[in-house]
Length: 142
Image 1: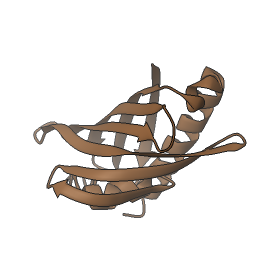
Image 2: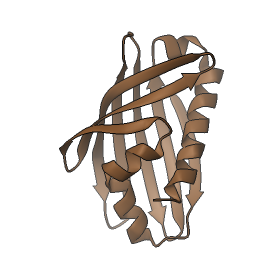
Image 3: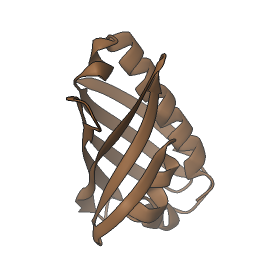
Image 4: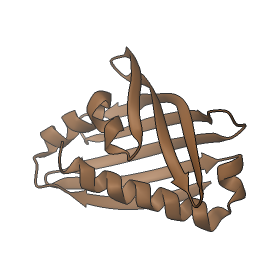
């Protein structure tokens, strides 16, 4: 299990940040290589992400669900469950958001298996850290 913490600032009111993270059509493309394949409900989507890890490129396909929300405290948890396309690996994560006026904090707990995991924990942490850092920058634009 890899655990990462990031903060972001975007200068927006908490209500706008709250609306953005719960809108899967807006939030999933904020992950580099991520796209919504199909909305299955207001709180769930089929999605895929193309990830480059070292010399390897992999595509993961699965679901993103808004698993928990607390509108009073402006906290939410998105659950990602994905399988490597054409492979045996998995990428699962719980992504917790704690929002405030001007930005918020993101706590990610991810479990990676298969070819991606075989590259070593250092590479996995580096790639995930880069994806999340890029994600926080893209949050400023939505």
